[in-house]
Image (cartoon, rainbow, N blue to C red; front, side, top):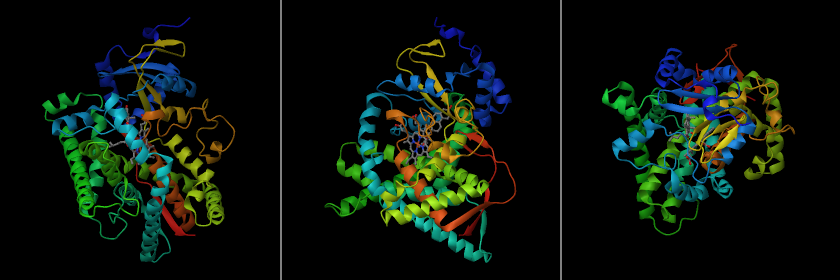
Length: 469
Ligand code: HEM
Ligand code: 2DC
């Protein structure tokens, strides 16, 4: 017999007391570990209330399947209030990230064709490959300058620039020039603003921003400054393309980028286009760069695996005879490595939906409208879901063991990550170029863990050494 919602285990009766405890445990930075602990305490389903943020949390792939079957026609995630508040405050439109209902769907359908359809990969890959080549050239130059035939560094800043250059080249069809020695201080400021925006979001997740605004809090002020920086720079990039499009009318010969395509298509209002392109630009920096940094870290810790990947890439290069799209079809282990990175170091600690209909999970009745969260970080490390979860093993994704609702790093269904194809191609091409050119080594034995800053980021700098192969 099905048990009622009120019997779901967990701490959900006193949200404000829970918020206080959460704060004492430094929960703002440990959300992923606290979630793991909660699953250990309460089992595969628990109910939670922190401040005014109420949720049901699940961990099993089979339960994830039930959740996503109940997401309805207009899948809705947790509303990240600091983000919507900023837009309301500055009178800016929501893009696809923050829209809901029919407004979201109609925008998303049009954006899907230009951003996530497989057809567009043909256009994106040559642009992204060029950025990858420039990254490699830049590293070779750095290595020369050290005079030691190697370069030891914290690559995160370089990867931020690589990611911004990549996503910009796809969005605008032209290069920003971030792989050069001199970089535009405005672009650097944009990068810093994104990091600050994420960092200032997490402390406000559980406290209504209206409250923070009233108290004139420092976090809210910094959050506003960060988004201002993001929007100002994106506005300039967008204006620049908009003007050019008017100057040289007529149909362009080569692919003009996502923004120009959307403008020419003329199906979304300019304000809607601007809002979503800004989100794509901002969403495309820390996500892929940090995933790549974790991947390099894992490759440095597993030299044999690194050689295996290098061999796969070499074979794929030879067999595809210059056809990059063909080459990307021949690197299953590289793709497995990226899945493995997202399993152990997911960008998003959880996926969540307000369910559209009643469901039964773990024999508990959960009413429509409830916020249900799948603990992605917890699932990736659960021994009942993944055999020897602590081991970084890209080959597990090639084997026949079930992958059913286990590879969810980009979310699921019509509301999944809009930047997924860009992110995947960008990361695969990066790894191809790195593996063809450098051996990646780590310095000493340092164990790096994750910190929650809305997305999961390394808790200390990752120092790596690159040597020409
Ligand atoms: C949404 C992960 C890169 C733009 C999401 C979601 C996840 C995610 C988990 C929520 C999906 C859901 O609720 O089902 C990632 C990961 C990335 C990545 C792991 C890289 C490793 C990117 C990039 C862009 C981007 C490069 C932009 C080019 C977006 C946008 C949404 C989104 C706009 C909101 C889509 C909507 O609400 O309709 N991403 N992302 N992401 N991501 Fe990404
Ligand atoms: C963070 O409890 C933890 O892709 C919260 O590219 C629930 C939550 C809600 C929304 C998630 C967020 C978490 C993590 C970061 C995500 C975000 C939705 C989109 C965003 C997953 C899991 C991200 C990084 C986007 C960011 C786009 C940019 C314009 C801000």
